[in-house]
Image 1: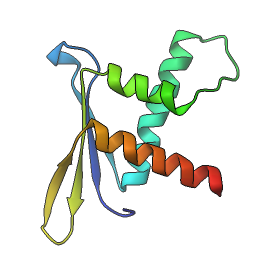
Image 2 (image 1 turned 60 degrees about the vertical axis):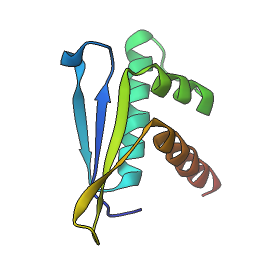
Image 3 (image 1 turned 135 degrees about the vertical axis):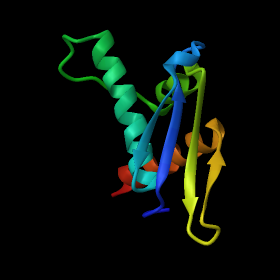
Length: 103
């Protein structure tokens, strides 16, 4: 899914004012952006930590802890953005991280 414009919609808390979005050139960049957002949260919680590790379950817990998250991925054939839910994002993150780990 490289090269498919992707917009990630995030609502971190139940407060509708917390809604935001992140804009990426590809699905993989969007997945990396979600991981980076989680890593920033870890650093905010523990600013003195120089190194930290987490596993896929930690990342899933972060995603599940968000009030809402979804992705809009551009389909070149339809000339439209297709919506994807939290479960799709979690599946794609797992596949993406697995591919990165194997390379």
